[in-house]
Amino acid sequence: MESPAIHRPPKKPAMTKPTSQQHSHQAKKRFGQNFLVDGNIINRIIGAIKPLAGEHLVEIGPGLGALTRHLVDKNCQLDVVEIDRDLAQKLELQYADTPHFKLHQMDALKADFGALASAERSLRVIGNLPYNISTPLLFHLLTFKACIHDMHFMLQKEVVDRLASPEGKKTYGRLSVMVQYHCHIEPLFVVPPSAFKPAPKVESAIVRLRPRSRTTTVTDPKFFAQMVNVCFQQRRKTIRNGLKLILKELPEDCLADIDLGRRPETFSVEEFIAMANQLSALR
Ligand code: SAM
Image (spheres, protein in one colour):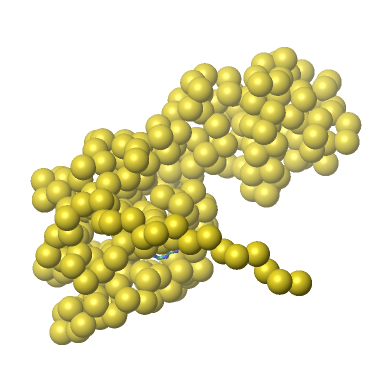
């Protein structure tokens, strides 16, 4: 069968005048490329990270090096993970003679961050993250939390609001519970679209995440993740409805201290932990 003709719209002219760095690079949408060009914002981000000599930093998505160039002269160990081959080649050339600099041309979602860390030095992970993969990337990084000291990320402001949300708010959901279970979350400041080229359509924000240890941990992490996920898929219904989707029979008498008529968004992270531990013990 003859395939239908593919309609290719005419190429749009560039929206913004390229900076000197960008002359030779056309931003790729599929890699979420919005490059930071505002010097004040870049300085504020570096000021928030406060990289110190001897630390081990990992930058995800260095791009054209807006943050990287401020990190290389801090005498840190710096590993950068960039998926775009063209950008990786440029960085490799630019920093060929830089000591303690290592480029990994690969997908950060597949990177083994644990292999980078050493027993003596945990990692400080940073990045102006590609927005299209920020949530899976956060979950991937959390699997390495034992070897991460902290993380500083630029994300969509809406994602930062959800990460940091207390229970009871519209922004509170699966992302809030799962990431707050693992980390302390500190939203730092908002970044307007004008700080990037090309400018994204939405506001961004810088957030600091510090892996935490908890007095009460989940006994079955897989069940916890599944339970939180299912409950928030039914966020307008009671927690009873959500739990019924993962448990054949809901042992209500064993959950007498939990009001199953409440909506999932009213449960604190601690309450989710306690509920998951009670239920997984009964399975
Ligand atoms: N750090 C630069 C800056 O602030 O100007 C670039 C930030 S841009 C928002 C995101 C960067 O992440 C791009 O360089 C893009 O190529 C890279 N990237 C996208 N997906 C990636 C992935 N899966 N793994 C590693 N890098 C990725």
